[in-house]
Length: 465
Image (cartoon, rainbow, N blue to C red; front, side):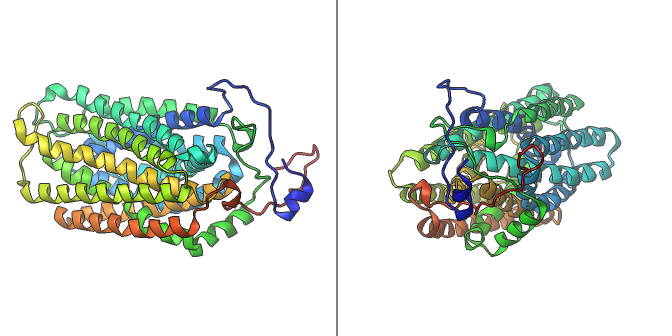
């Protein structure tokens, strides 16, 4: 780490460490991104597959909607607090505590399959919101601060591809286990939930393999952070500052809308327009499309131009155009859809093709939109301490929007109204992100925002907290 003089003056001398050239060195950013991708493959990846079934795999979506409302309400709070908690506890405790709540949530629907009591699912949803806030704040800090500055889009796409493979595998579970139940089956079987719980348990154990930023060394020998220590008082002050940080305020529409559209896509496209087994198949392609979308936008935002600012502008513009086309297609599909008509991939012939392509395109757009936002956050700073707070704020606002969206659906707001609101919200976010690119994104690593460092008090053995 830099000398005390450099620390006190606020300037930074990057610490360099001799490294091996092995591609998958355990303490390299690439290995750590792959590991956090596998953790998210097992936990939120399987959760996405479960949610993507529509109604949590149940015939009546009320229990799922209420559980998800509770989830995203607590997620909104702990998403914002999660960055500060991560800075205090580090990745092991933060990620392990977060991952363990996913298993409980899937188990609550296994219980609901037999007892039809939604109280357990709602409580499990609220606890998962706390856990998800911790997990995603840690994930965001890792994904945006560990990679080299000029390869953040590439590393984000690597993470997003591994993470969404969880949704692909998770989609195969209900597809295979419910395949022979025909197009009249409405509720998934016990084996589906047990399969989800097994993967989530594995992800909880894998979370212990993630290294703190101070132990991760890039290929050029620099460490991923110069953070010396943090404490509760510091984090409370820094989190409060986010609410009048103009950069964060510009991101609110993008954050709010980025999970808001799941309610419409899962409950009013996949759930209402397709048979149970076809919904599982659709999810395989929905999450598979996310892998394609993240790779495409990651390449654009890392390699399209030499100028970082220009790459950001191009990436946002590409997503804006594609988003307008896809939501236009959704409008046409919604107008055409006949209430009560259920499509099956084996029995509906050509009628299946259009809605299927639309659902696939939703997955493509979701990954491109969120990868674009994460890249934008990563372009604002280069330090784990700052970025954990930024990504926590993003996930908190995102979750508040999702909580509202699930309750809107619970109050029987029409699918057409939900579609229009989603289209308007995402469209509003693009010009604001372009303003952020022009005013806030710098061209060199030295110009990005870093926290002012303080000298940490030493304990008896000379270490810092």
